[in-house]
Image (cartoon, rainbow, N blue to C red; front, side):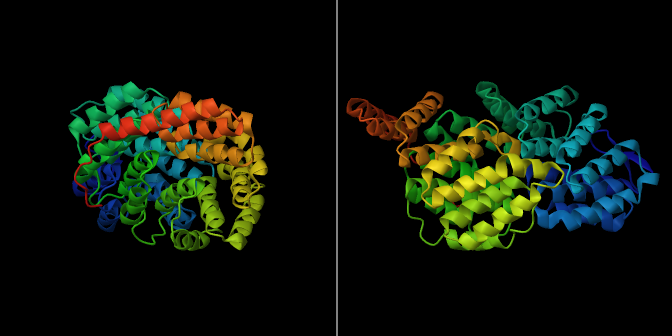
Length: 473
């Protein structure tokens, strides 16, 4: 029979209890808390024909970003398809969108979820999947605009309104609207302090603007809200590590890696991505990380053949290169060469970004810095096609600058360093890049000036930062 969820959307369900279980599961999904899969499985155990329950389960598999989840995704999609004769148009659109993802057409899938929002702007499930899908596709403008189009249908009286504000805050940040993003994120948190995505959106603003002391205080002071029992916490800890990294506090960065970013040898891909990205930044700086690369590379090696999402493969390659796993690196590249000939969104990502970026990382690891630079230069402006945020994709520019320095490409390095200083003049790292570049140019006075500004930036940040009591990770 037709019922309505707590946002007024029609659902085909056997009982009000089923709908209430869906509402509870969706709340968990929005906040990345607890076990939304277990919650929706309870609803399906009581009502096996609850079609939106199968759709919800499918989205969990999609949002994992893992090829290993495809069998479970197929199971849920096919269960939903068997029920299309007895469900409503909204539910049929959800099934079609999940089917497109299963078939490898991520772009069409996200468009279909977007079409649901045109008719049902309060469909929180469609909105969250489309939002994360836009992130996977690197569609920065849609991260902002898709949520903005739905927002007029929401207000504080609608359950989940704060989560929608948090999504909008992140989209605003990715489009460089930092003041609006910060204000919107703080508004979201005033409604729900435990919203990790809104916390994350403000953390992005503080990272992009080089406000390191504020970024550290922001995340550490609020960790009691967003960290416990949260499936997204590792990523916010990663953002905290980036702030410490910019201040050169490498011991604290490694401590956060061990305590919070990768506290166990988890095979959760999204966590492994952050682990690789953090260690690679230390690798570029020549910071010893002990034996941390080896177990991470071994875990990535178990996923080489998944062939699902090029963004994942790039981070696997970081682990193989820095961990000295040459056979695994070669095997991954061979897989990518095969995948680029296929259809679907991943084949495009693999051709345009995945293969050249993985080859550049391998060249860097082999000491062929000139080849690394040649491969990375054209990727700077198209890398978003493989997904991720500006903060995540910055690792490409960091690798490019370091490779150019090591290749002795003085004019190019100075230009790249000037770019970074212009974007974030409060970053000691960026001024250090410029000092090294000017040293290559035999510009002693310019190098000394840049070094002095690096010291000033670090001293200013340290003076503004009064270390709070350490938060248990």
